[in-house]
Image (cartoon, rainbow, N blue to C red):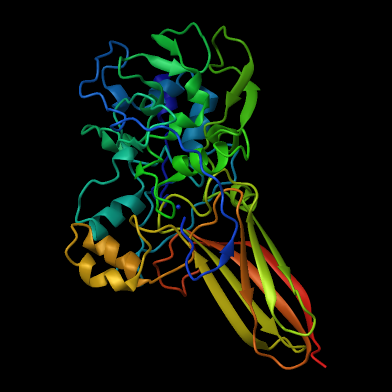
Length: 434
């Protein structure tokens, strides 16, 4: 049985690390209150010594296929993305300077991000090209960790394992405790040591890999802290990360075991590669406030995400493109805005390029700052209002606004393969000043 299940393991590529907000350019926005938890004096500790386990002697290096021998449906979701709408377009690093990473042979078209974390050539290639081969993506192969408390000010990085890194984020990476037992949200009778931990169904479970350092609004890799401070703290909703990214279904956790049918999360973690997930995050409204002027207001609302959009990697961006067309369809004027996380704890700006040359991560930092200032991500619950008044004569026109999600804002602007249109608004516009 184990041999047949192991044969199901398939891999795919191009999932960037997860995987945010001071406003630039003086745009109007709606500030949000933030929760102010009382932080401890130091980050949550990472155990220095991991207890050995007779059932899991390899710890988080235990291949997920071994767990899939009993948990077949869960493994199928994890390894193949079964039941999701995820797709992984080909991505490039920067223009023709670095060729696009090629996916491994026999790739899955929709493997979950966790399944490919150790073999995905995108972060591996980015590490080689931009981080001078430093293994910065320790979240892709963590050792067992203790779930942090919600109120900590800074969450320490997980400790990386040195062995079997190609296995990536295995089942054990999340479910194996530092003491060597398997944790889950329900009490079960299992052939391995099991402990109940209700936090497996709460956002704290995701915090270790999706909250790098202290909260800095606008910065990358802040997803958990954005949820905690912008969404859950102010009372915008009760959803946990798992409610959206691991939707539940009624089933057994192990098909052949004597366990009850209950609500069990689908192990998919849909996100930036899922059209359903992207399409539910933002809403765009375009209006003309005054008939005697050609000015338009563009309202960008974060109505569906419990965190900033875009979130995670600073490579990800949202482009808002607006243009005015005459009656023949000719483009008379256009304007573009880009919303993206900062690379570091300050806005990306060309003014810091000289300073960046001295940084150990100079390649990545200079790449971010070379692109110059941009708009900060849209925070949870925020309504961002942008104004534009093109110079056109009196007459009848059409306003077209498009919202586009880009997995890598640093590549050649002519490369469209990693972009997805989220919405398109067309509005008749009449300017009659007399």
